[in-house]
Length: 162
Image 1 (cartoon, one colour):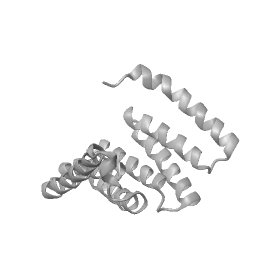
Image 2 (image 1 turned 60 degrees about the horizontal axis):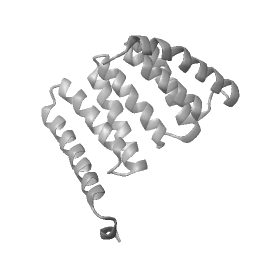
Image 3 (image 1 turned 45 degrees about the vertical axis):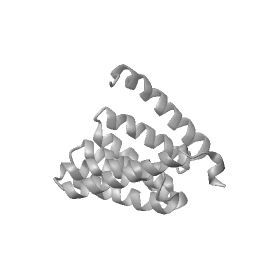
Image 4 (image 1 turned 45 degrees about the horizontal axis):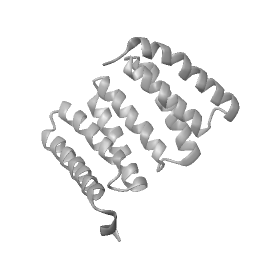
């Protein structure tokens, strides 16, 4: 359930946090990129897509400049742009963002990371909207395999891992 009042209360707090971070750390610090990303997510939820896209792209540029495009935070920005494009009804652009995020997350975090599952699940939604059902199913299957493996590993007694 979306709470419009909560979003309205959150915006000035996100903006204040962004302003403080920019002043204290400089406009191209990774924490500033994180604040931009958070405000962008809020705007996406409010369907303020153009404003959200500007913030996501600025965060993406900061993270690329600071750490490069093989960085997990860069993948988060790409993923969130994908969500924006999915929400905006542009699934082709969304798939492109998710593919890039997935490649980075697999390389930077490993094939079994929850971020990989998130990328695959989100990409499945965009692919489904494009009518690419077989690719949708492959993404869902891969995400399910990762989740099943993680569940099995959590269920194993600690002694069996030695």
